[in-house]
Image 1 (cartoon, rainbow, N blue to C red):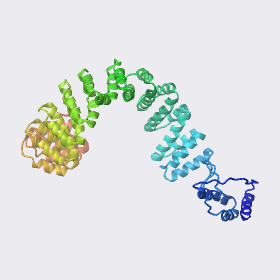
Image 2 (cartoon, one colour):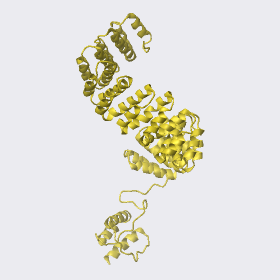
Image 3 (spheres, one colour):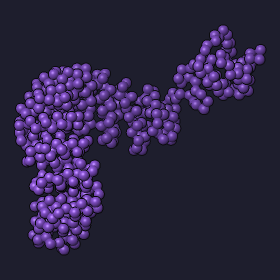
Image 4 (cartoon, one colour):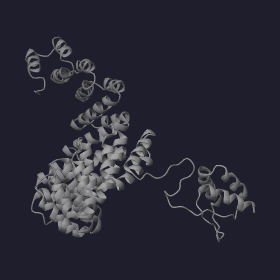
Length: 497
């Protein structure tokens, strides 16, 4: 009886006239939590009756579990109802923004607001001051708007003042629009002003289309005028095709008559081709003209070296054009040195003396010096006197000088007099003049070779004149440089002899 009296008081306070009858007992793991949520609701409506109701119910494991409510129909104590109008959403967004604006609360509010009034949500987001909150709010508004009305979202994006925001908006709109109507999306993207935003949009549309219809994506790519957007889209299509069917991707690449298109396609599938059939991948590269081959060397060998540097180095040595072979081996050595400098150094040391070894040694020494300059210096110094030793020491000196000028200076000072020391000093001076031309000038004076010393002093002067012309001019008057060199530097400090 006491339970019925308490319940009657609550119902009377609400004025609902509802009669609870025939409720079946239902087991629920969170029955007590549900009851507490219901009690909070009662508490707001009838503060006097709810405690009595709670007292009569008690913490029963098998008590009457409250009916679960859908999200937004009832909120726990302290929460308010879900916003329904733009004014309510504006207030909720401002509240979320005051709490930091970086959590899910603001983004969820904006996303829900778009379903009610997308323009108001986007306008509010664009009214925020530049920063993370504005970026997140605009992204949430435009991405959701583009899913339901991409044309209107595109018109709004055109009003944004920041090029970076326009480019980001173009990508989101292109993504959403092309999944629904790629032809309309393409027409919109082609009408955008030339630049990064248009290129981003076209590539996004092409990438989406390529997943379902590579032939259509190819038509889109070839309909574009020659340029970065066309090359980028061809590259994207090749990448998608290679992931699904490498032989088909290779056949597709060979249809292009334009060299730049074929090169873009090769860039997209080169990695997979090298993994599956390195002989044919390198053979294709060997059949290209030297200029095109040179542009594609890094595309093929850099990712290959990241996965299997030893194999990549061996295949780089099979390129028939000497200059490009040297470049390929240098690319592999550089990537290899970033992950395993000792192994890369051993491979370079085993190359035949000549341009290939020289170029690869420079890359290895520079990369190694970024991680362990002392050990890199020892390795470079172990080469016999000659060009490869000088170039490797120069690479170490410049990188070490950028990282730790004092330690690098002590090392350079310890080198024996001679051409290698002078070469290292020249690079060390170059590293110093970028931040401290006064120190660079002092070190340049220690180079024993007169011609090389003057060369170093001129480099110091050129940099110094750009940083502090008055101090540089005063210093120039005291240097041992010939008058002709001083006059040339003062008249045209950017010119190189």
